[in-house]
Length: 299
Image 1 (spheres, rainbow, N blue to C red):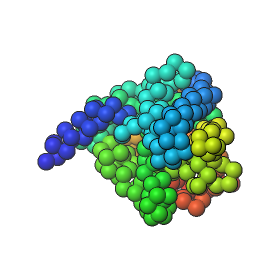
Image 2: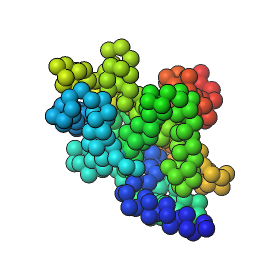
Image 3: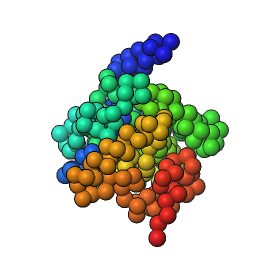
Image 4: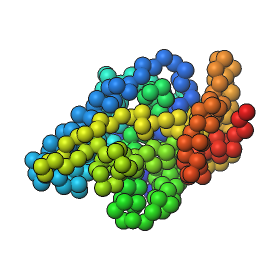
């Protein structure tokens, strides 16, 4: 039965071209150009295109606008913007092989997807190092959160519990052995994005689109600075592992990195940033921020 589950998972990941986990440690101090401007330009182009397509069909139809945006930026189990960041020459990126990553000592049964699926590259957005996989979480799981909170009216707590369930399952520790708080933060901010699209769900003055003469008009550009922060960085917002043995393997590799460099690799790699994100997400610490970060004593 266990082998059958592995087969289904690997097929599932491979068939949909889903990116694997990301290593925010090994090459985090290597030079990377900041891609904020290119990412903003691409995203707003697609948002504007989605509005034009919606207007040609049914005018100001929120459901259709959501669908058009998902078709351009999201996707089933992977994100189209995620794939764009991985292929576009406009986005500077660094790929890490499993065999050179801090996860290289995981055996097959501890993290079998890593033996079949390439790791996500790291990129820099507004000074923050993140994995390209976070955009899939932002648009897809963020959409799921949005539906739970704003459409089904089940409340934010239910959405956060749902995110915990998915991270313990197929999208996290249930397959790769890694529970990523950074993934959950991307999910949460994705919900904010979907809510900020139209006036009905956005905070005052935050909506991106208005309806004028039965046509959507983009009145505010999306700026990724409003969504991406250090909580998306897995070397700041530390991940957890299925076993103490897996955790020890990662820590040993981090110790090796530090022996070769004067930089800090131990998570959280920047305590000040850890302080910043726990203050920002203080209402949802237990769901979004790792215990290593929110329990850290900072003078």
